[in-house]
Length: 385
Image (cartoon, rainbow, N blue to C red):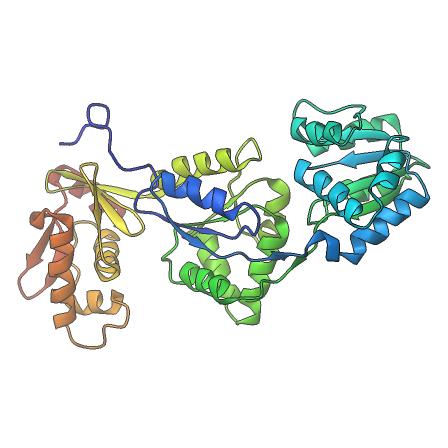
């Protein structure tokens, strides 16, 4: 039998799983990280970003800050801060903006943002070691913000709790919306992702911004599929969010999410590498270890891609391991199979061929099929059944 320590698998930890990517920005980077670890990736940007130079809200906020200096400016992301300065340059306001920011106290959320601030010829007053916006908020509230005018560089989305807490403390907050999110022009990929979730052909969906999560839910509601999507995300399809702010729209709908300790793409992918294999069902069958993943099966650690019809049959058999499942019940599990039980025999033959170990599934004459569960495990699953 396969020994994981002696024979590490050649495939990646996400082999056999399909992951949806809702990101509009850095989607290629996230997709490449997932594919490098073996995942099949469905790209479905749930949003599009309004180009900075076309954004009247950013222009208005920039003019407001130049016209009346804030006491404090909070920079939240490096790409956002650079984008703001570049957009101001495009409007002929770059020097005026930098001159104004030289007069104010600048707080940076982390080292990347510090680098962007210094590249613009400015100097930050303070930055937390944790890269946590919550720590920035705590510092501001401890110092007291009553009567202060604070500019906060938003990054494509509101910062729930952050702006409200400053205003509750008596501050005047000027939001600087570096990007504006709008629904994607092509809704086809998003619809395919929703359909994939509902059909359970996706194993996980990644979210890197709260607006993307809200947009996906909104589109499902428009199509009359919101309840179906929530049911899928609530049980079968893992929702992986880059951080707690991103997770809020999902959690508001009662969806449990997982998040990495560090709010970055790399840790998000590492989290999936742990979570998805842990969720896969592993069974001792006919002397083999069989692990059932989204679109493939590991047999003693060897990856066996399986057609969708075969995966449907295998899942039906694995719900009650060792029990006989009738052809009629298996026919109902086959998507679009109609009424001909011969479709079950055809799909079963292909499944056995794909698994490469025909004895994993037994034919029980005139009754149906069963997984050849190892005798030592049968009593356990009899009790569970």
